Amino acid sequence: MKRSRCDQTIDLFSQSYAPETVAPAISPERVKTASLRVKTAKALDAAIRDDRREREELARELSDYLDEPITVGRINDWASEAKSDRNIPAYVLIALTIVLNSEQILNALLEYTRLMVTDRKYERLIARELKSEIRDRLEREIAADSAAWKAER
Image 1 (cartoon, helix red, strand yellow):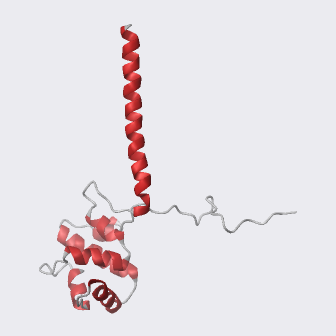
Image 2: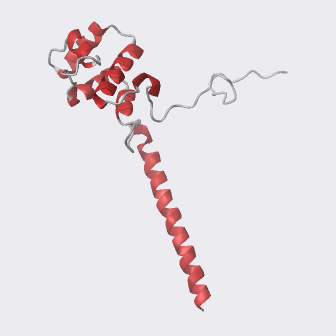
Image 3: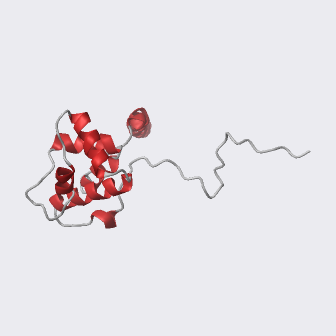
């Protein structure tokens, strides 16, 4: 008798399975530029387009989140490469990242740093790995000290 497959288990060998992304990013081609100001505008524009909500709805949600009026015109200005005098304030950038649920915006801006934005659920895993690296280094140092001590005897 043939057993049926469990539909509650992920099939790691299927073509549709892809592991979760640790640091979501906007494709570099979409935000490539020499200027951080323009990169910010391109990242905002890409994230807003990917979200697929109407800008009116985003403006409303952002206004509610910040408890201050945000217009579609302001969102358009922040996402425009041509509006060099309309930079988005940091607190609004964070709020927009939250409203869009898009760490990709911040990761695009951090591309040339050693930093990245990742889900908080990975914090313990990262801490464990850092501690493992320290443990491994200490074990190598202890082994080297033991070998040196034995060689001197």
